[in-house]
Length: 317
Image (cartoon, rainbow, N blue to C red; front, side, top):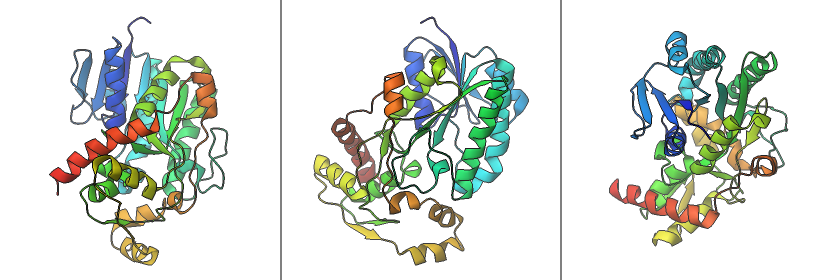
């Protein structure tokens, strides 16, 4: 494949993984963040740009073959304020540059479901965060249908992997305690089966979507783990590093609701805890069949993640 220019908005764990893979394959990569941070590589240009500035982002995206939206406002409370202008700016940049728009999405838009999620399942969000993500996709799909852009979206479950920061994963937050041998307070049922998505699989899916025109105009689910509850995952991680069985204490839902009256983060968290109150499963067979992407081998991923997270947990104890 000839060298191309790829523009990535966001340098979190996914954006950085995408940049590393593309740069390693010989492509020119521009990483867009407010601070100008990003992976260090000869093929990566780190650019300090406010991506919600339509003109600035459109200029930064000129000449790009693919534009990846890997941005994520810093907190749930910021979503309603920051996402609309940011998403509009990214759509504008895709239209003016001609780049394929590949968006990193999540599963919030499906709302509570009683069966494994598929890419063809209708979006029925139950809180404002899911409604916002659903609206972002509908706007991108409408622009695609109108011929203004070429757009696709990868939807991932909760992240797992050595590079996942504590603040971007509820599992990593719990592991911060259990891998240091301490009890962890959990916000929901720790024994419900759940799908977990490897950062490396998210990156692979995003890159594949940008390169394959069969993927454009549709959302795709990232292949994820077999069903595994919070307790099961933390138990396996504890076995890997010798931390023992996790001691989990559940926060009463009434206490969460009461705390949400004064703590915005808790209020926002209660809106998505349905994901842990019932089985939360992913059926990404179409992604595997059409794009050839398979989930990373679970035991290997869990071992690498446990060792990395334990170092962090012990260091911060």
